[in-house]
Length: 78
Image: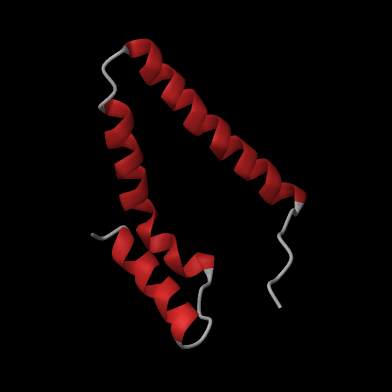
């Protein structure tokens, strides 16, 4: 609930009334997102698949950090 409600409400408000979606304002939901990811990975029974899941998440995080420091930004939707 704490993960989905802020994201969905901001998205719906942005689509229906006025654009207010700013990613940094949703940073408050990150702890709940990380808990959800950790719960999903810990639910994997096989140790090999669990390690692959952890490596996959780390790879996605590393790619995100690389894009951040290179200054890659998507063009604004005008």
